[in-house]
Image (cartoon, rainbow, N blue to C red):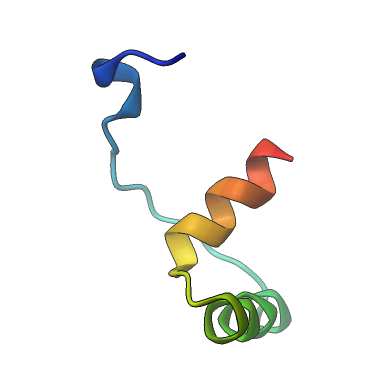
Length: 45
């Protein structure tokens, strides 16, 4: 389990190819999540 300090979020800038952003946006609509959630889960997997 992660501590509360480890769960805090920090904003970072990220540049992605347009096609990836479009795919992320499709997932946001399909799964009712936001971009952050999708990117976090993608990195974790």
